[in-house]
Amino acid sequence: MIGPAPDHKGNNPFVIVAVMVILAVSVFSIGAAGRIINGGKTTVVYGQAFAVGERSARSRPGAVTLDDLAANKLMAEGAPAPRGDCPLPAIDTTEPGLLAFYQAALACLDATWRPVLAARGVPFTVPRVTVTEWSSTRCGFTPAEDEALAFYCPGDRMIAMPHSRMIRTADDNAGYHLAVLAHEYGHHLQLLSGILEDAALLEFDLDEAGAAEVSRRAELQANCLAGVFLAAARLAPNLVDDADSSFADTTSSDSHGSAENQVHWAAAGKRSATPAGCDTWSAPDHEVS
View (cartoon, rainbow, N blue to C red):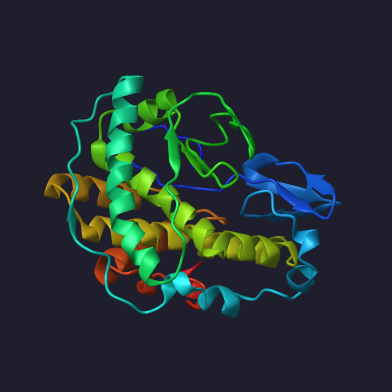
């Protein structure tokens, strides 16, 4: 999810993925800030309704490590994301107008990432995007505005960008809207490649501090993947500048990393222009703090 909107109209890509996780037959409810309460143990978890109990070989404690995440095929060496035109309509702050902007941007994201995933042997599916204010998803109901601005629901493969929240925060700043969408799309890529599920399995083994570290590495990778897209898409320079500014105008978070590192990883994605440059999982601690 995108965190609560800031008081000003700056850009704040601040995302926690909303989830429900099923372990064996027990269902754990989503709490504040996307945390899952399990018998007094709180951990931030990613993924959809994973039947982890049915995958005993991978659900044992210690079955997934940071090294496993670093070895994910999404980050395999390969050609940069292909350059391509990205025709976007002028931003329109009405609900249908904003949805049309997001759908056009989503088509650009699909065109950028489809060949990248194909080259790495990752099956590709297109996510949905919605601007509905309140909706029931497989991740639960849309969280309150003081908890989230926007979010990705893995169970529905859906990016939710509630209209009034986005307009109150971003107004007609097209770069801001694009940066949020590209970050959320990064979580979709993590789902398709298996990163979200592995992160969920790893986090469940950890205490709160360890789970927060995994959360930061996942969120910073999503920033980086958004940067890869911004490097690949042929966009108006002012729109790219506004998107870059959105990563700079943020706050530090235990689950998302310092403001400095959020900017660092978005810039790393733009520099590398390939997901191989987005290995937050083996990055040193100071780069994911």
